[in-house]
Length: 505
Image (cartoon, rainbow, N blue to C red; front, top):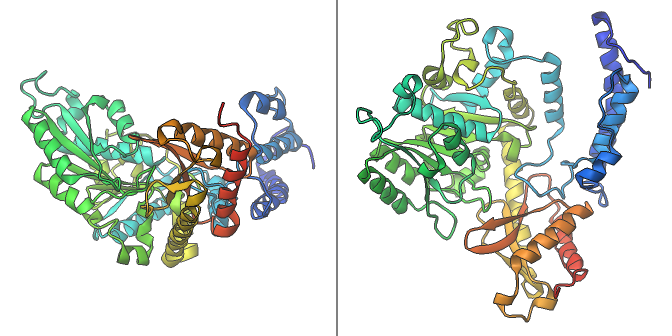
């Protein structure tokens, strides 16, 4: 490698970039290719104190040029989790895809900011068109659209802020002063309603907005993990009886732990009855709208067109690079957010309705919509839908494999699995004959989880859920396609590692 310690003149930027891209290609192509090898590791894991000795995290006074930068790049690749590996089944996302990498390269090359149209005209229009197209898939009509946000939590927060500012606009100027503290107020203490299994970002939003987590009502769920609509209405009626003001209902399309879908259409009727804003957090499950098979055969997204706002994260199920989260609405698209969230920063926003930053809570905005736009261009709606169908078929097959090992100590938490999370417990043979109250399933799960993840062969997760012991949660995404090679191998690994543990001590 040629070593350069100083920035090149602008006329040499193209030459230097060509050189760096050449070096980078030599590293990333083998890295991606290695993920498909049967014996490849998901990660070479080390705890922080050991990792600091293996990787040079020092920052020099004088630049190290190509040699210094690429030494760090090589170390990063060596010790990072390889999300391209099909045995990465830990989180609600997986590795990206080739067009995803290219889209990130385009974004980095342009280095654009999509807050005002005139500095990013093409990228702005990509965002307008891709949010409109997704909204129309959800049935939100011709006036649908939305904005991209830095993650699902940010989308959910923008939804809650927009709901409050729409329903009670005086709060923007005078602050939040509800009855009974302010007898003249048009609203009482604002209350939020969401299921017990919803994402913690609802709580975070209430905290950030000064509404308080104590003013979130966690509605009970049924045996499938779906919000109980009768319990929701009862809770709202009780709140009104106390002089409070219910204003925001969050329904979840694909809960984080079990993958349950709340009954959106029934919840919508409650929201309209009590003048509440209906938001659907479809960060995980919303992308199933791309599958014609799912939309034809499953009731998961029935009523989505009735939502006031809808969060969807293409970086989860669709393989779009992190991060890519969109907040959609049928109410005049991005103009809804600008109308209720603008602060009239005239030095930046000059009245152009395509200045998308005016509707957000920040200023600078990364053009994440370009990644979804190019992915859709590359694969088409059908190709993205095939990705969903493939993952669902693999999850169903894996659940069957778990059930086939019931005699060996495996037991599904929910049969059939609600979505793409296959959740189960495992009891080692040495504990099989013990009374159930003497078998600590949470300890077994956590012990095996740590040992398996630290081995690097797999990366999986476990989850707690109210009223039941901790269990393994295996997230099936599109890259995990070979059930018998990768998923049955996981069950074998659990049995093998369990034999190495002295469960009596």
